[in-house]
Image (tube, rainbow, N blue to C red; front, side, top):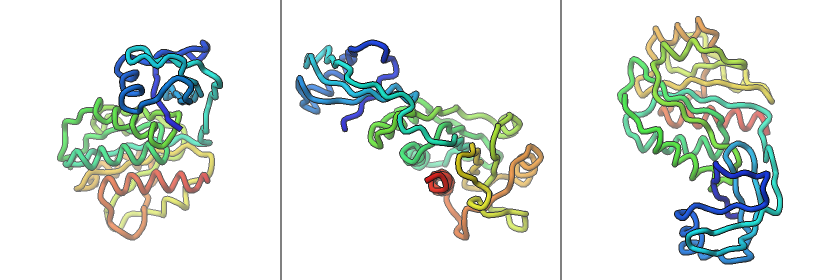
Length: 236
């Protein structure tokens, strides 16, 4: 199906007109015409099936044939808090793949060992939009801008709180042994240089359980995807 992101759509009405930019893309690039079927999502869980009734290059309009609220809603909420990589391409790849698998919130953490301290969240949001369109999802994850670890880690979270790190000799257990189906999960992933001992201790003091993602030592972006995928598989 051809899915479009329409955050301002009012699905209580039976018609929707795309923006001029999106209309041009539909008519000129995709070469879609009157009578063809399209799908729209507001990124908040609603998916709608429509039919093109006006193929104008400036005001492409569809009539909504079916509206599906809470489309393929997952039985859990996944919150990923991660320190951005030095290479922006890697964190962008991570956002794309985590969105495709299924994540509700991505928080960007500023840690002691962070090498990247500036990041464009608007760029990441566009990547996430592209990912929901490609993977045909109706839920767009919220991307929270960079925030200091020590400030963020004290915030409350109703669910399982985990911190994945590489420090040896700590009381870590396998992440998959703790995650239960239909349970909300928050996972912390550190930067290339890992979390500092002080940050790990602060996380533990605030209710986070130290976990392992396996025997391999993973890059930041790989560890983030492994965590998101683990939770998704347990909920299959």
